[in-house]
Image (cartoon, rainbow, N blue to C red; front, side, top):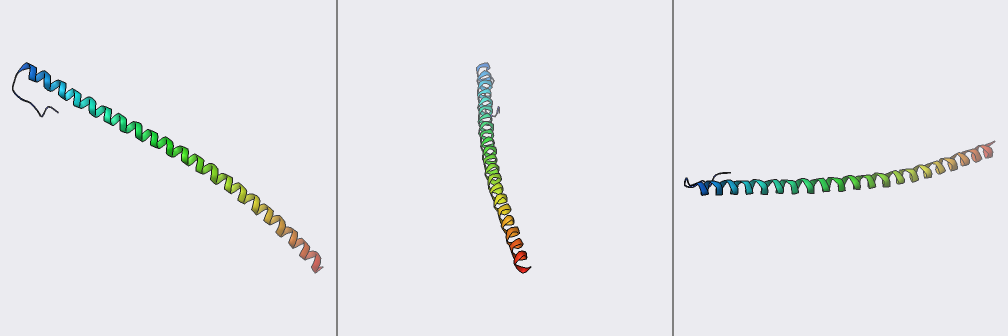
Length: 86
């Protein structure tokens, strides 16, 4: 900032201050936009992770149920085999 310094008139001095201030405000606005976009992306990522975790939990519960059913069948077949062997 201030790299465009010219002659020593008061109006040029004020013009430089205004230009530098404008550049500063533009930079602040650009950074605020970046923060806003990054925050929005982070919220979307968190929501997607939550949905994925819920889906995975549902799949895990379904697999546990199938495993319990399979164990019950195995126990039933084992009992039938013992009965046949005796």
